[in-house]
Length: 331
Image 1 (cartoon, rainbow, N blue to C red):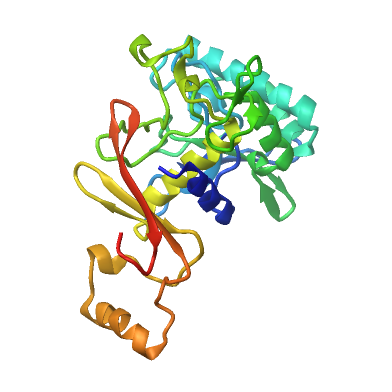
Image 2: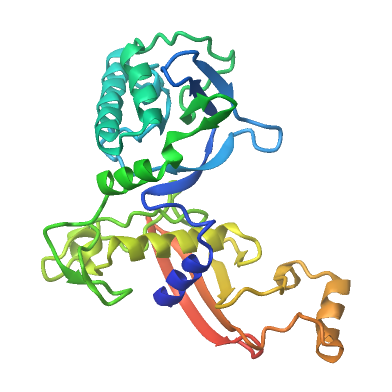
């Protein structure tokens, strides 16, 4: 699989690639407060089109052992101290872990919106919010903080200073080791674990699969453990994982079967519509075939076309085959 071209693809879609340590996920509720941390309200962001909530770039990280808060955007145990699957005592402990994280971020990022969130959290009593909850409130759903300033509101997780703090705090890079990144070829700190889980893979785990992983000693060699068996720097790993997720989520760049998915892309933007591959429309196919004679912009002769066949297997991405060709030729 052309890792360099996956990185290049991510770099051509900056608006669709999440920041380092972030992932696009649906957010069900917005906890709105004013600049003093008062006038609280919980807004349901679900719509008829998307009942899970509003898609946003939100902080993420692996937490296999639990009790790991996500900054200013998490479920009710961390944000409000309201028990979900855990006991009251455990939910309270998780709440205060999140308070500590927000306090640390506020001390470093020093933004007024963070102070507002910090003030609210320190005045709030875990498990007893001072505002009414919706009748159908889901404590397992994601809640994001928003700070209202006049007629505008801002989600602190969107602030550059907060994103920079989270990228450092949630980093998977091993600062004690320098290795050659197999993607960019530079000497950098390798990731211990791949930072981006690959979603929507046939046969993959619902929570996502990793591009590189070694959870058993039989996969390890030369004393290298986990993702370091194939060392990759954090930025390259993030771009590659994000590009794969983007390709797998867009019907214009993948064809899914019960056992694998074909992903495909070009190295330059194209007006070509891939729907004729898996959902051919007679009129569209005719227009495409006639485009050569009519000089319409349906040709890909100036682009390079990349393909790969991928699937999931026990939490890992399985790469089956790949190819590269001029888009005007057969693949």
